[in-house]
Length: 167
Image (cartoon, rainbow, N blue to C red; front, side, top):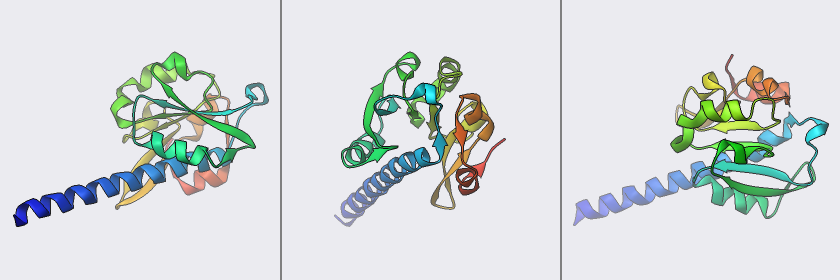
């Protein structure tokens, strides 16, 4: 009986930690937008955040999008099933489960003004712009100024200083 209770408690704690991580990732995504400048040519009516595949972050993003704006624009959370569907997104989030598609995605979005955010170690070395990283139990992010610039985006030095810069 004690073993079952311990397993249940551990499962609940795991769900809580996962939920917290999803919430933090969603908040980070919204805050990244404050420090990125999109070209005037990509001036759209809405601010689109694409999610490649499925992830718990989607629910958190939808909650935030219902009560916030980015750059005075309504936020649209769009589920994306292929790299071509990601075109037009201001931000594309790629969860760990889809990280094996990074090469195809970066090729498809080359020169597109889309910020690519991933969730698996070393993805900035493969073309991601920003990558979530767990360092000493704390949520941090890696950032590649060169990768961001290659998609016609400008990044504030302040955001670079807040992250772990990757060349």
